[in-house]
Length: 225
Ligand SMILES: [Mn+2]
Image (cartoon, rainbow, N blue to C red; front, side):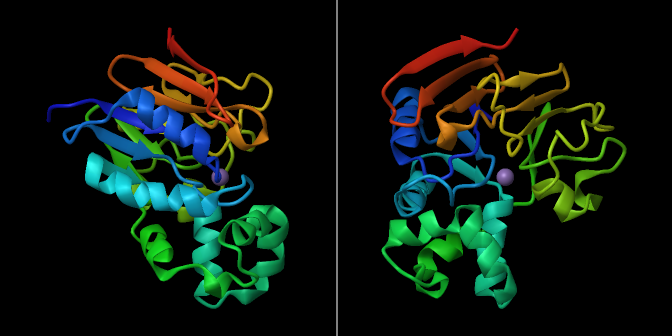
């Protein structure tokens, strides 16, 4: 397959940062872009982010992964209404505000449809991608969804995966360094954008990555070493 393979960490409603990274990357049709999940909640513009992602599907090969926040919205609209109070205090209120609605049932169906199509995980030749975590001796398709979406690296730091592929993960916000976590077999790209960190886009083949702040003002390019 030709083209680059890139991954972007947790966006959480930070539209200016996403726009700026997409301008920097200049994606083409044969580029593959994996989104690591958590498009919604916490940051100010979930609506704008999902609108942008719907267009992005036309611009490159897009593989969006389902994050725990994205999953929570689907669970509530599908009937697990007892989770709504938790969601509202977990960044959900910002999501409702971005749509200018007071009820989760007023989120447009096109946006829910996008979330429903998101993946549990995906893989490329030398890498695999999940939102949260993995189990080192379990194939990804046999890994419980709560591990893939909810488990933090702060709870459990796994060893290298049996597939020998490098793990590319989001979810575990690197609040202190606000930089990519790299252990040799595991890369975490959640660089805490919504909380004054940065949003990261990573090229899995070259090790280059780009980071921009929440307002999309300052962008830096670095390389994994
Ligand atoms: Mn998450």
